[in-house]
Length: 269
Length: 319
Picture (cartoon, helix red, strand yellow):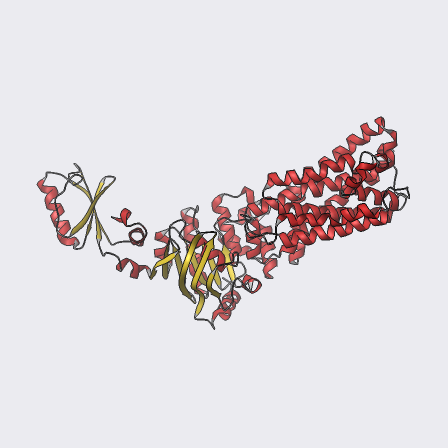
């Protein structure tokens, strides 16, 4: 097997072996999905229309924004990257492979949700399955890159929680998961446009469900792609091998540049 | 070691008499000068010991040689490769056992071997796992290994790609006697295969036994270099005489004995350092008999590297 294949296989297995990662990749999103399917559809029957994409986006957020950063920080703190560097593991592999394997885990949970949602909870299946898969993949890439960037810039594991929650909690409230963007006050919409979940939901609804959207779904897809590419580029640039986090090039605040496509999207709608 | 591996190591190093050189090396952290203008060379096939107390600058020197840190002055060279400018070339030339074996907690032993060998583009060396007593643990995750097992795995991974230069940072710390002997045997085999070994250690007995030459670092400067025998001979040349008696009459004795330069009490022993051990021992035995005391133990020892090290790094302790 090539080095890439060995590394990919190891990282994928880590997502299953590590109890914390297994919880965040599978148990948490699927448990939340089951709860929302059982409870939310009773409270708000209209939720069934967006339940499948919303729960897919939730699963993506859980695995990438909540699950991905901490292992990156812990590995750096434990001196694992120093071992990797000495043995020729490139920084690109250290960041790209965990992002790819996380996307792989997310695709498994997403498939479970999209296949069981309509049967179990009367969720609406996508009209265009190919578009659904494409949007899921792009969203997972964008969120995975942001997760990697959070892991790179966080000084320690506690900081990852703060950064992750800074994205996760607003996404739950104003990111179009629980409430459609069309129901949000207009003053809130610019803030919603800064969140990847808002663009993911708009792209899902517009491209996979043929439903009217508040934002242009193609723009949203482009914003996710550009934001993901920028976040991943910044993660590579700001990546630090040093366990004491003392040799990074560039200031961590440079990470805010990853917001640029999302900020631009406020003016493009 | 496999024959092919031995040939490969020798082929890589045969054009270089000096495999590793450190010239005017300087490393600064903020306002703190960790290493200041040190120089030494390591010859092909040599085991070179880097000794020094904590904070002497050993790890800073090693980390810069390994390409992990940038440095602030001087020149480092490993087989004609500058670690700071050509880190990729360096990867297959050196094998490094870090002081703390940083591996992912869930990585299995055999998986680690496959993983790192794949990045070095060589076949996995499962024989090393067996050699270092890790075969039974090959399906265990890294977090399930004892400290000693983790260090042995670190060593196996460091040498699996048959690097011509091996850098070992405290390789035997936390190892049991059997593992230590096995590690020393492996180091001898690597040396016989043409490998050059840079060994940083606190264990003076290990350095004295294993190293062809050593450098002693103190507060960021090299204060002594040479073979262990040269270093001990270059010391004050005192012979250590340890005496234990039934009534401990020597413990509070201030009498001068011929040749004895220093006197101290260490646990149950009265310890003398003498320039002329024969007359000193004769006088000591006479004194013990005159005091109606009974001799229990008498040891006459050549100064060890450890004592020479203490003499250099902390003269107060040595005396």
